Length: 116
Length: 113
Image (cartoon, rainbow over all chains, first blue to last red; front, side):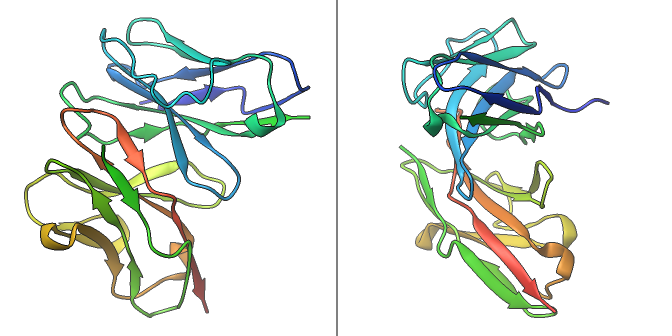
């Protein structure tokens, strides 16, 4: 079956513009994560959606970042007034877990964001 | 809150030599532990995971990891390195009651012919 897909694969934008990144999780996966990976660095947790529960937004770096998820399907990560420091690969992952983070995460290919 | 450290951001081994990538965790409750691998220009994929069953966990491509509670460690090993093992390796921890998975900073493995 299809894996996690993300679009666009690459996004170049000017400082101050808003961008929207999309993630399509694997069908039936109740959990969805967004991570940021700066060049040569590890994965930085941003936000976590689990079913109909309130999302865990504890990793969002500022109020310029927001994310939404419709039910158990598509999620969008929005970055307003982009800054050069936002340049990174944004990764989405989904998993089937319903009771805690014990299940395998399946990662998308990422969106490479470059802010000029 | 849980956290993960990985000793050594870069590790180089000769082809055929032992691979040892270190991971230590911090958690107030029994953790679930994962190793993910990111091959060049590819997405992350799971290597193996520990979920409170056997302490020695075997994964794909000949890798294994041992959970040692007394040392709060979950080191990744492979007896004989292949060139194809060159990649970025991430250790991650999760706690049931918190759900989210926290990743370590990663270790870049180079294999020298």
